[in-house]
Amino acid sequence: MKRSYQVFLVIALVLFIDQALKVYIKTHFCYNQDMPMFGLDWARLHFVENEGMAFGITFGWEYGKLLLSVFRILMVGGLIWYIRLLIQADAPTGFLLSVGLITAGALGNIIDSAFYGLIFTESMYHDCIPAQFAAFGEGYSSFLHGKVVDMLYFPITWLHVPDWLPWIGGDEFLFFSPIFNIADASITSGVLSILFFQRRFFREGLSHHPEGDIAPVAEPDFNPEAPPEERL
Image 1 (cartoon, rainbow, N blue to C red):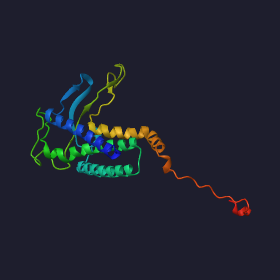
Image 2: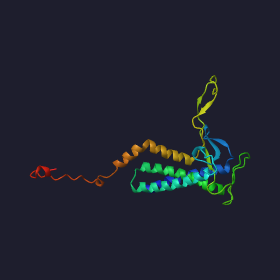
Image 3: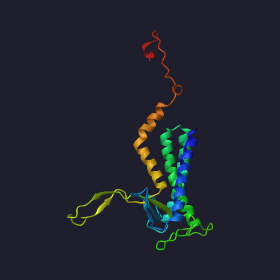
Image 4: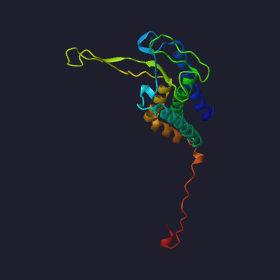
């Protein structure tokens, strides 16, 4: 299978899972509704929405949402162009797929920001009324101003502070408190793969070059009867 098809399949698969789960959560969960996954108390589906970056980070000014959406679109355009260059340059497959994961995650959150405000009704904070599909353009917001759907929550308690300590006694600290989505996880996985395995990616890429691609080094002619200054 050509590597361009592999990258396309990775991006398509991540987008399908990300959007399918988001649409299901958006149309079946009340805002802030929470339920365990696989019977595990520390792995939960918890529906929230955010207007900002991954893991709920936001810009605190009026045009922050629009700026973020435009930045995401430009970034995805740059990543697609970069993937094309990587394929042409015969870059290592692991590195190529890692960039594909980052691209898929960015695309997944762009879809939320660009279109969810146009096609969904508002998810109510106080009334348990799941959102519904609306006629295109009659949703809760305008183009590029939709909210990103988050639902994956892993509140693993890793530290319990003894009660006798002042101020923080009795508190519990969570291993990972942000709520995120498949797109966020895809971006994080791609970035971590590049950071942790970049040496392996490029070492394997170099070792797979066929010997025929390496031009032999020409040996200089040597004439023992030539004058000393011409022998080099």
